[in-house]
Length: 112
Image (cartoon, rainbow, N blue to C red; front, top):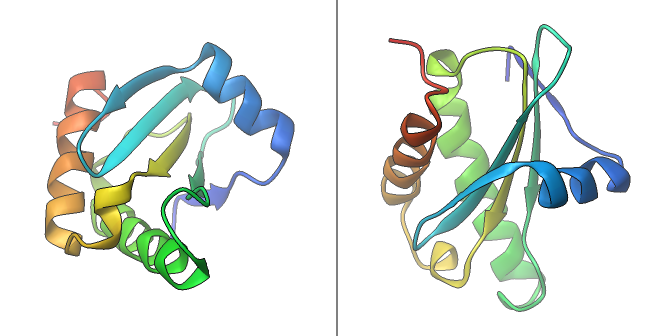
């Protein structure tokens, strides 16, 4: 991903959950917050409620690919956390991308 780095620290995820704005779709939950950088930081999570390691990794891969295809349209300077929901395991990437676009459009994070 060209304009995005990973969000790695646990305290950053906690801050996003507490202070960030959120949108929920059937496949994902999206949290975002403005950062003071020129690039976006992305975190993708999938809890054990989704299933075993295979299911969680599949959900993360689908979400990561959906974000990669959408990345060029997203404004810079935001922290974004995407949480996989149970349906993400069985969804195809295009459904997840469509819901990601809808959530980001609702936040006005997409460039026109």
